[in-house]
Image 1 (spheres, rainbow, N blue to C red):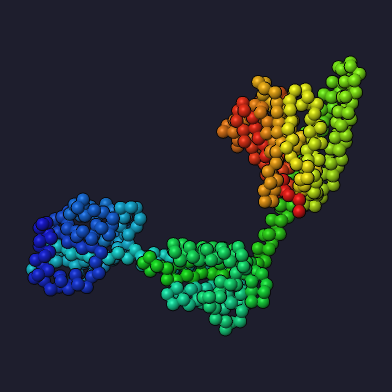
Image 2 (cartoon, helix red, strand yellow; image 1 turned 120 degrees about the vertical axis):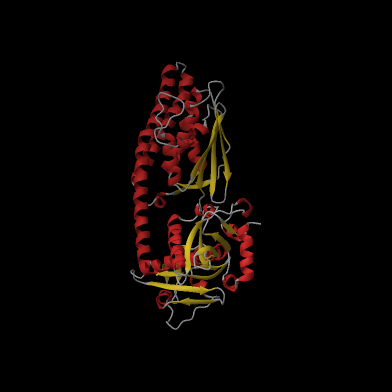
Length: 502
């Protein structure tokens, strides 16, 4: 047993003041210090356990705790100890901070008494620790709340509220009652207060936030809609702070602010920005459609005309004439659709039309017929006839044309091209897949930039890198999405999801 520990035991037996001191102290640690040999100090196990250390591994030396006390607090402690040594009437009682082994701060109330010899000279010092970290945490929370309330009071129409979770008693300030549209003598009830929040998503959010706050002690800040006592919708910002005792949340409190006018202005501004962004996006799409689609049509016409000029057999020339006529008709129809795009003014919804998916698909297949014939390939259309979708026709034609021409353009040199068109039905959308057996794309390498503008992946001299960019923007403008699966040297599957017709 350490000699200081033995000495302390003897003192407790002989000195009533020492025993009384221990009795009056609520201990989270006890220490006994040899003032004549300052490096020697005995600390009981609780002293180290409070700070997260294994007592068996810690030496009975003053330097052991001096390394973990906050330096400025250590200096204050030494100064106060010296004052106590000089004058017994000056108590040694102060709050210091230690750094816990796990890194967080432990607030300790440190009290001590000097043991003096017959001449009154301090030769030993007995001290006790009390962990007050929880108290300090509550004080910090109260400080933060006070700051919050002071800031909130500078704004108009802000109320306060609290809930005593021990006695299940809610409280609303007069301003909070005013926001809810209830009279000033209204007494809120635990069972009905939550019902002021608009039923559905808003009520679910506040219930979730309150439950989480009670269970974990975390606060919240939410913008939600309430229904006033008069039945009017109002946007409010509610802020909640928790007060805990041990592991239990005993109180919720915070502020309640009417932000309806500001929120409505924000929503209106967001709507205007969305309309502007949508118009800009559609304008960009239109410019791309003009350059990209007409270029594809002209290429198909040129190819068909080339076949016609090279073919001397009159019968075969006659067979090419319908293909030439169909290409011209498709070009004319595209120009007509482009004129429709020009006429779109505001919302995409206003230009959405219910069309037959297969009808537009067949028109696109006819448009690439010459290209597929030149590539000696096959197209398999598994899409049923009676499928209607809600789309912008010009966008749909552009999407089909781009996916089909890409499948032909990036065909494999090792096999004849084959394109398969299939359809899957979802709850609100149809998923049209365009599958090919071409070169494929390395998605690990190019996946993130696949739909970027001016991105190319196969080194074709005529590749411009706008087709997939256009397609993605057009699909999304029609409330859809596009997905891709691909493997190099095996092929690709592009799936576009189009909105079902009502």
